[in-house]
Each structure stands twice: as C-alpha cells, then as structure tokens.
Length: 462
Image (cartoon, rainbow, N blue to C red):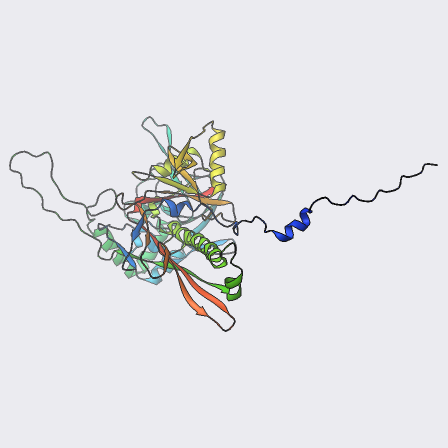
C-alpha cells in the first residue's frame, strides 16, 4: 500500500504580493473608446464653403428642362399601375394640367412580364407604343459602324422608352430592348392614346400647343445657347447674345444636428483624475454628431448626395455586380472625377469582379492613407451609403470644389462657443438634480454646383 507524502506548508512571502500592491497604485488606463467612429472620408475630402448668411444660393445658366424624370408606380399585389400625375414626367405630357386626361391615360396601360433574355422590342420595328419600366433592367442594343452589336445603355425602374410613339410621326425603334432580369413593363398603345385624345379637348389642345411650339436653342447640356460667330472674314455682322440665368436658383439652408449632454456635478467635481470626465463625454458626443452629419449629407432627402444627383447622372450596372465596364461608364459622365465613394461591401464586390478578369488596380495615397483606386481615382469606403434589403447599394462619383464647379460642403464658422468649425457647445445650466447640461450643435449642408459634378452607379449587387 502506497503512502501519500504529507503536504508541506506554504512558504511565507519574502516581499509584498502584487495583489496587495495594486491596492496602493492606480491602473494604466485608456480614454473611453468608441466603436462607432469611422473614417468619415466624405467630411475629409469636401472643400468647405463659409456660409455666413445661413443659406447658400447656387446660380446657374438657364436650363431648358425636357422632362427626363422617372415615373413612379403603385401596386395591389402583383397588379402594377402608373400614378396618373407621374405621367407628367414624360416630355409630351409635362405641362398637361387636366387630371381627368391623365387618369384616363393611366388606365389604358397594359402590364407585361418578361424573363431574363426576352426581347421586348426589336430595332427597325414600328414604334407604336410607349413603354414604362416598372421593375427590372433592360439593355438597349444597337449596331456599330460595321453592324456589330453595341450596348447603348440600361433602363431600369422608373425609366421609359418610345416617347415618339405618341406623336403623329412615330417612326421606327432605333434600338433593340432585351431584358437583363425579370421585368415588369407597362405599355400604352398609340391607338389607345389617340382614343383618349379624341375624348379630351384639354389633351388635344395641349398636344397642338406642344407640337407647334418652337424648341429653344440649347447646347448639349440643355443650357440656353450663346450665339457667336467664328471663321468669318471681312466685316461680317456679329450676332448679339447674352447669358441667361435661372430666375429661381436653388438655395441650400444649413441643417443642424443637436443633442443635450448631461453630466452629474459630483462626477465633474471629484472624478476628474487622471481624465477630465466632461471633456471625455464631450469628445465622444462630438464624434457621434460628426457621424450623424456625414450620414445626413449622404442620405437626407433635401440635400443628401444620394437624392440630389441629376437624373442623367444616374446609371445602372449592366448585369448586376459592379464590373470594370460599369466603373468606366460612371467616371466618363463628368469631365473630372476626383473621388469615388462606396460601402466597404461594395468595394469588396468591385475587387471580386476585377480579380475575375485578372485586373488588379493599384492603390493610391489620400491624406496620408493608402486606399484602393480605379483608373487612378481613389475609391474611398463610406459606411453611410446604405445597403438595401435586396443586397444592392450605390457608388458615388464626384468632382469637388467651387473652382471646379463641383460638390462642396457648407458650414458657418465663428459661431458662439465654437470648439470645431461649425460645431459649438453651449452651457445650459444646472437643474435641481445637480445635472449639468450642455447643448452640442453641428451646422452643415452640401451643395452640387452643376449637375455633372455628382454621379451615381445604382442598384449595384454586392
């Protein structure tokens, strides 16, 4: 039988134990950390314009609007119908005020469903109906110089085709429309349009006025043309001209993000060593306000970039994922694209498509940081650009600065109790619960000076 050895008593400590020593010292600690702080690239790259009057007016040359907006729809289950007033987005019906005629036209549309790969219209066939794309993507295909197939663009939700079908001389389709995805299209036959016109004196009068008006001269951007002469010799009579302006230019008012920071006086009085509690609370509050500011500058329906891009500057991917072809199409829409912004998941999708083609875009340096690029243009991550429920997102392309007629940020400096440009902290007093209150406010907005300063690649599948 084996005998276990007896346990030896623990040897006494010859020096002070660490557990006891910690009672007489302070730990090494960090300032409060915040996971919600992002790179906020948009706030960093935008040039900021001083807005002393609280509003910023963007004066532009007069532009003749041709009615190139998007049509909206309503649905009851699988049945989709066009909203009658939305038919004014069509050039031919833009100024039609008769609601009865619009409702009659809306009721004459036929709903059609197409699968991916189906041909909706064929080039050369008679343009005898107006098409409204309620859902899905269609590709416009034409012929090149040697009859080779070429892609002319993509139509998606809210777009329309076949406007000339409603005129007395509709002609033929100049391109073929093929469905890239499952599509729902509403079609209005020219015969149905004529029936409504015969029954509506207001619509007939509107058509006569529209077809008989003279089209104002304009340049390729839609701006009122400036008459001039060149290449002449001798004493030729020179044309007189002037540069017409918009009569009602848009004004951007400064928006505000605010919160009330509350700190108990006891905390502020006796728990300030080694870190000032009020300063740390304020630092994290300011970070949260700046995050909200960037979110609003992207998503706000009044001045946010996603909602203020010109309709001609909104394009769709050709297949779904963001391919190099789509990125090239996006940056070609303006004379100088300086920055691209996308959600990090979208940037990853762009990287996958480039890798599939054996393309490895180089990195570039922006403000001391190495970032991805496309064609030498920085591709910056921005987690404020939303990812929709169907796993689609957007890519923003922009030119910035007043000198470039680009996108600018708006703020006002020199406000009372300012601690950062356009951000102030105002003492609100101490209540009967000994809570110290501070009003923290950030004033900001964003403006797009000319339409081609900002473009969006929409419905990017990630």
